[in-house]
Length: 318
Ligand code: ACO
Image 1 (cartoon, helix red, strand yellow):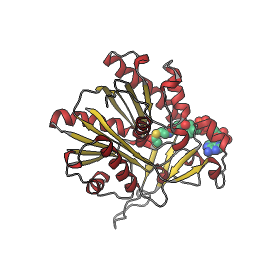
Image 2 (cartoon, helix red, strand yellow):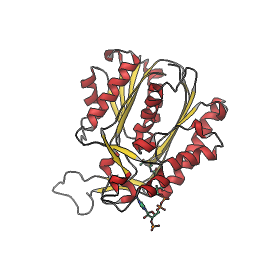
Image 3 (cartoon, protein in one colour):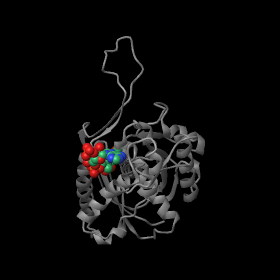
Image 4 (cartoon, helix red, strand yellow):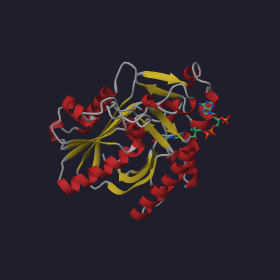
């Protein structure tokens, strides 16, 4: 595969750390030093589908491909208020595509998983062009009376259009079953046979310290694996595009790999953790700012609930 278009969309509403401290026992200093987050964008009058459509349209416009020439839409989404139909099918009708659509839930690692699946679909099915979309509203999973998680997340969507090419130089997908570290449960419609206590609502719970530890370890291992297998010196990678979970996680990975900080771009300060949308939003912003040059090697790494992790090494050749 080869990336030929990028797009993103974020909600208009900007929520600062000071705004959170108006109703939570928290403050700008705690949030900034622990996470690097200053602002996050939250859905208010828009809904997630609006962002998903806008990001997809931007990516398609940037690619120059006609919507009818897209042969597959893959949408990474953890949850939204439509259980069915899927986000990808709802987007398809709004952007003029006529193709198979599939949603995947791989938490924050969804973008890299989707790129890998797209690569396999190009090989196995001879697809011409594929739209990979990540649309996430993690701020709707939270108990906003609890400070631990409410300060970390933001909403957003990012998308890429892929065509046939040889820019995927390596990837690694992993999953280790663990529902202790990050979990979010939603109550289903009750049946007459329901047993009390089984069908429950439980907003996002996260063991922050454990996630931090697992994220740093898995990311370093995954990146090392793809670089070694591709025979690429880590210093020859132009940028490491990491899941924007927390600036301290990004810094710990960078320091552990003994690489220059300038190779690890970050948008977490403005957008918070937008789950699987964070890497495609970052990629789109760098593309639009002229920061990517043909021939650049880009390494990506993400991790999240599952516990899942993934990394990919790609060549940017647009
Ligand atoms: N404001 C002020 N104080 C707070 C806040 C807050 N928002 N949240 C927690 N605290 C308090 C705690 O209650 C605790 O107080 P105590 O010592 O009196 O008990 C104290 O601050 C320290 O809490 P820690 O958990 O030790 O803080 P830590 O330095 O570990 O930072 C954090 C917490 C930011 C959550 C960190 O563990 C982290 O970044 N973890 C990774 C989270 C992450 O990236 N998740 C995304 C994964 S991807 C996915 O799929 C969701």
